[in-house]
Image (tube, rainbow, N blue to C red; front, side):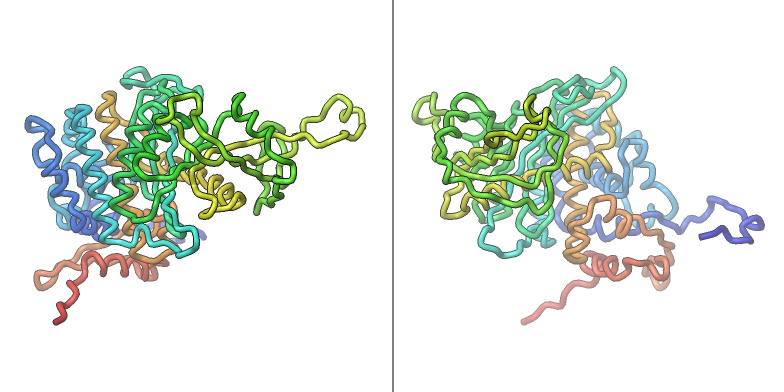
Length: 468
């Protein structure tokens, strides 16, 4: 690629009132409207004073800005350029949207949580968000994990140093994934930066599974790491009728259970890809798995105990002993163990299958990275409740973007938000009006023209004729 030799003879002027930079917002926001985003916010959000007036339009403006790539309140100005005022109505200035967010309290954030849940349920009715590849294991996977969103300066309420050593705020998320589908976010909570991972997880799991029941008839499987291995979180999942698959710490009880596993029970498994082991700074491609019956929280009263299976994966311990360092071979293998507790019946998943399923919990890390590469690149306000609301809005934008992508085909549906935005949202267009009809003139030879047209036709095209 090379600059045109005529560039020196041209000039640039910002004076075209009929251009829009993100024409893909038209079908996406049409999808949001058909899923009831405006009505839900107007009905269930009760932010006081004039700051909370027209809540539906303000929530839609914030979500639309995030879909278009905004990651701060100032970025919402990208909705107010060129012909955007002709394509959309009810677009608010960034200062108005900032005042709206700063009026939130914890109760209003919880109202927004309820709106996000209902909005996702309605999106699933408008788009094939959770269409699964039908296999023998059709569980809906609910993954729970938290992440630190880094902040700077001392004006952020609740900011602190957490387990990662990074100063920020803690976002706890729950995602839902079906086989063959990309994850959607079913629950979210912003917490202060110094909080422990399991704090509030019981309530979040309860909220998440309530939403999951509205989205899927499958028995959900809640997956989490060892930070969430506790009676409140696991009890909430089991009470809601879900199975669990949670990593356990190698305490005395777990070590005793592992020691009682018969040597003949270990099965060799092969990873499809080598796994990097941070402890030994090496790549591991050999492992064995076995399981034993196990009752979680056996030291508690009978009603609090949870029967299940302890599944253990062991890998060779590659730490060299002093003798090995001198070139002597080891007399016997030494192993390092990784265990998790699950309530999935062995008739539904055998040892190897349930181990492989548990390891796929890492999919939620991709969701964390996706959010931080879009609307959660910043938490823009100094007020905690405003940032908590920003998180919920970012989740709604994430789910809306995902729903729009599923309408274009299975491949875009699995792409990241940045990729979907580049192909379907950030498409420049020129507006033209003729015979009282508005036409969006998009770039010729746009590489993803077919997918964009499919999305636009589905959300903005003529209604399907009624059949008798």
